Amino acid sequence: MRFIFKYFAAIITLLLSTSVFADINIAVWAPLSEDKTSAGSELMTGAQIAVKELNQEGGLLGEKIKLIPIEDECNDSLTVSTAQMLALNKDTTYKPSAIIGPYCFNQFQKVTDTLAQAKIFQIIPTMINGTYAGTAHSGLIKMVGYKEQQAKDFFSFYDKTFNWMRVALIFDKNNAEIAQAVRDVFQNNGKIDALSNYSFEDYHFDYSDIAEAAFNDDTQMAFILGDAEHVAYMARKLRSNKRNYIIFVNKYQVMPEFENIMGHLIKNCYFMGLPSLKDRPEFTETLVKLRLLGIEPEGLAVYGYSAVQLWSELVKKAHSFEYKKLADSLEDASFDSGWGQLMFTNGNPTNTLSYSIYSYQNGEYTQVY
Image (cartoon, rainbow, N blue to C red; front, side, top):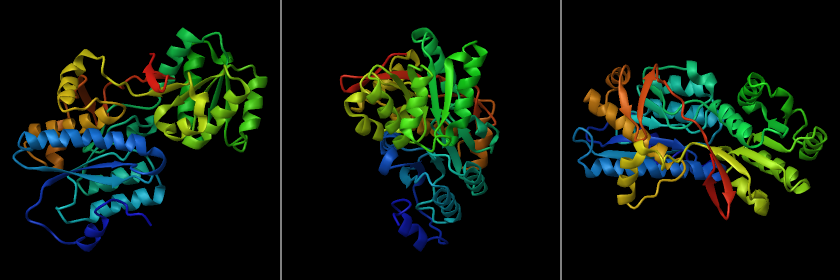
């Protein structure tokens, strides 16, 4: 079995030991191999830049910061066992003071409960399902908001650009909440008759059958939600039969498989993702700083960077790395995220970031909305 993370052997050997002299650790828990490597690598890159910057400025409270990568397998049992291993570890050489992630939300309640009991601070740097809004611990921050926001942003773009078209909403059971949010926003705007629904499970993941049903319903575009391979093959089937058929997908769900499977059919597909922030006036100072370091922030890198920044702000405000003091400093306070001020209630953001929409053109992603 692959190591859960690169220091696994050392942690098991020293599980119950203690260390007097150690750096202060912050971990990034993200997929660093297989199908979600792109997103995980972007988060890690951003965090690495932020940690390097902190250390060049003398560290935090005079302490050097060390970044620890944790492999997110996006698997229920492995995710829980990783959280338990982190909680049991007594070796301060490797035990994180805070964790950015996990990226996937397998067994989310168990994971957050385990980390909270171990007094490990946790920052979720990407969009999370609205179901988890009620999952609250004093040391748990959902930094940017909820995935259901994409329903509103998808409809807004659709209404301004393609509102004469019928839409096929294709989804799996893991995305049923987001699919419902899409239905709700179409209903609330008087456009529910323009939406047809297709569950992957109901059609036994038969892409041909789903495509036939969608074409028979006179749909001209599809919003597809699911894991990378299913989304890519579904999109390919639709596009192979109708080259002008419009495809929308969630960028973080599908890469890099989508690009590989679609090939030339990827041209003019649309991707929903967190905003790059480059054009926001509030981000100018951070952008200049990153470019001086030789970094052009792309994708999720800026969110990894901002998560470390948010943690460092809390540490400075609390003048401590202790879980409770960090948690106490979180409430009733505003924090500079690099793109604007963030405020939280019970770890939930007062505002959810809106998604941006990108089109794949000439070998690159161009923001169109």
